[in-house]
Amino acid sequence: MSVTKRFEGTDRIVDDFLIGGIHASYETIDLIVDDVDVRLITEDVAIVVFAYCTQCIRRETKEPYGIQGLETQVAIKENGEWKLAHVHYSK
Image 1 (cartoon, rainbow, N blue to C red):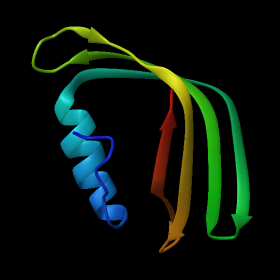
Image 2: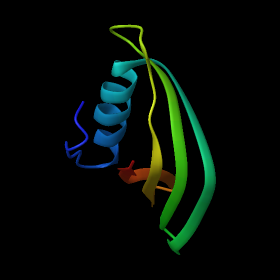
Image 3: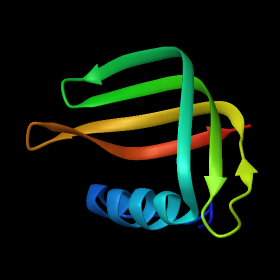
């Protein structure tokens, strides 16, 4: 998985990024979030910003791995459901 890869559409974000990338790379993932700020831009668009740290176990090597930083997410309402449309990580 590359942090520079682009995923087109909400289905690709879930299937290729979340399931195919993150879940394929890590056996366990504990995400700890703090200072969550949700801003509703329109009825169908929201921006979420929060501090995060992860505590993971790499699937292949069983080694612990973790990162921390700031995450920005853009969510869109599609067919009445909120879906992740964009993610940006800053360390």
